[in-house]
Image (cartoon, rainbow, N blue to C red; front, side, top):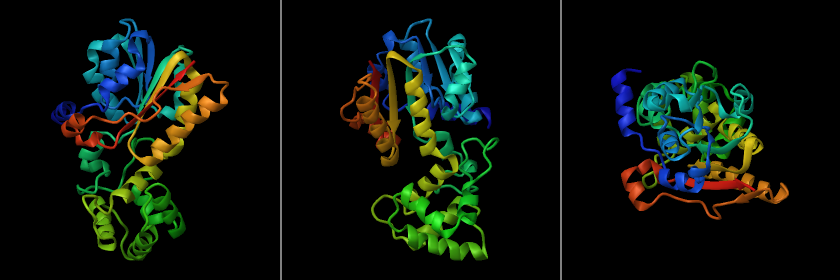
Length: 304
């Protein structure tokens, strides 16, 4: 990725629900915080500016390109940030290496990052011609979206599109995909999006391929399984008075977070309390400024 590309992405990126996260996190009391989804470092920058001057942020990101961008943006905080190029499902193991046993806060911003969508070569967007890839880390992940579309059984594809995409026309879409792939395998994002659009008519502003691409991305990166494991580990590692904040962007993620928080509050001897009785959502002003924030929901839990 070129330097000009990096600079452009730094300018464009705006962290979602930033003020709300900083306020609900009670940063003035925090010394060690884990940003489980570092991205380009937007949330981490504000956390570092508002927490104890000796406080540290441990930033996880599975995408090495994000680590590179974040290091550039956070270079003035170099002694206060630990960068870890790993999945947050591996937090427990990775955090043992830095010899800090418990933490004051964990932040999860689950949305797909702007560079993933904007870089056609990553294959996340049906609006740009690119390979059907969708891997967050191409160096360590082997299964691509093309593998899923072309090699999974009809039954498995229907399950994925229904479960992860909540697509009501999953069966019809998959039947057409299976017919087409016998003659010619799907290789590009626009090729798949065009076939889906032929099968399912567009209703409103939502492109017919939106849910299909969401489902493929979740399957390729095992996002929901990873989220459950990351939440479990963060609850184990959290200090008393520490907080877990999660920003989700679709109902599948939000349901997992909501149920996890509820179960922890009910079954852990009241050692956890839900701070946000209802999810916090962006203001109209933020949505106008950053349309990608419109579906965001923030939930926060504290360890008593």
